[in-house]
Structures are given as structure tokens and as C-alpha cells.
Length: 254
Image (cartoon, rainbow, N blue to C red; front, side):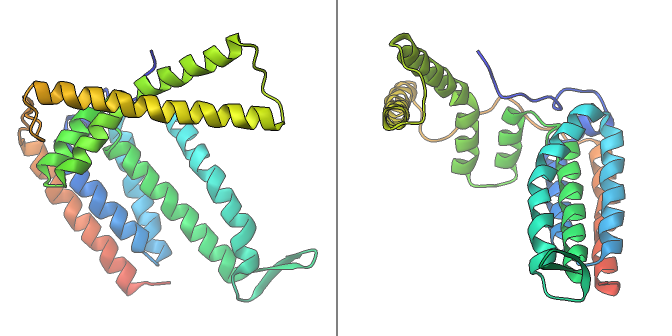
């Protein structure tokens, strides 16, 4: 049985011991400010703050680097398109295509912002286990249906994965070999359709079982969050930093 990997949720660092609600609030405000920032100065300082959180969390840098590589794989395509389509002063030419200096600067700024936000989320959000994350979002007054949807997805995702492997094994036993032809496409379409049908049947059975146990659309958690002095210190120290980033972005837009 496979489950969703939570490589960063276990630990005893300062970041791990913080209240999940505080980490979510700081991560949300920080990500919003960085996403809207236009100033390279503000974004570079944001990156330093994200690196500081990463150091305090004591995470495995090899695993962090793997995740950064996955995201930057998508950003690579941005570098292939944006410099050659954004208007501005010519920087260099590749055949008939001309890259603009403004396009290169914008691609660099977007790369920096993406990595900064990702580092902040890895340091603050992925250090929370998924069940605790759902409870923390519920305590922050987010829509309870959204929180329950996330918890149910976490609970039953591996069940659907098992069902998929079972169906795939069944068609292999019957001699199916994937090829580039209509029979293969039709077989995979049947597989996806059967997966949807069985998922619906499973969801109906789970819902009926929960109704039999008195479920009325609300979870009652035994876990209660407690507020400590370190949470207050972290929140009070980070809010001025985020406000400073806003001020720098306003005073030094370029």
C-alpha cells in the first residue's frame, strides 16, 4: 500500500514546533506579497527570508533540491518563450528570433519569485502533516467543505490507486500489450471509465456508512491547537518583515 509521502512533516526543529495556524498565516501573507512584488530588491530580500526559514526547519536539502528542479523544469519553458515574445530593447539574436532585455529581466524576476514562494511553502507548509493541515485550515475559518474535501482526498487517494493497479493487472493477465493502435486507446478509455464507476460506488458506500454512524456534515476533532510564546514571537517578528518587503516594493519598484 502506498500513501502520500510527507517527507518534511516530521521533525523537531523550531519551525516544526510552531503552531500550524501561525505558519499558514505567515506563508499566505508572504506568498501574496512576493507574488505581487515588482522590485528585484524586495524579491531578493524575500529569498533571503525564505532561505532563513529553510535553515531553521533543518530539512533534507537533497529532497528540497529535487522539488526545486521539478518546478524549474516548467519555468525553463518560460525562458524559451518570454524573452522572444516580450517587446523591448534587443539583447541577442537566435536565427530570425530576437530576445529583448525586458523579456529576460521579466523571466528572471518570475523565476526568482517562483523559487522564493516554493521555498517558503516547503519550509512552513510542508512541515505540517496533511491531517493537521486540514484541521488548521478549519480553525482558520476556511470553508469546511474545502477542508473535508482535502482530508477525504488524502484518505482515499491510495484506495483509487490500488483499484487502478488491480484493473491494469487484470487486462495484462488477459494478454493486453499496449501499442500505438485503436485497440490500446479503447482499452485505456474503458480502464478510466471503470475506475470512475468503481470510485463512485466506493464513495456511495463510504457515505452510507458515515450516515449510519451519525455523520451530519461535521468532523469532531480530538486534537486541540495550543498557543505558545514562540508562536507569538514568530508572528510578531515576521509581520514587520513582510511590511518592510511591501515598503521596499513601493519605494524601489525597479
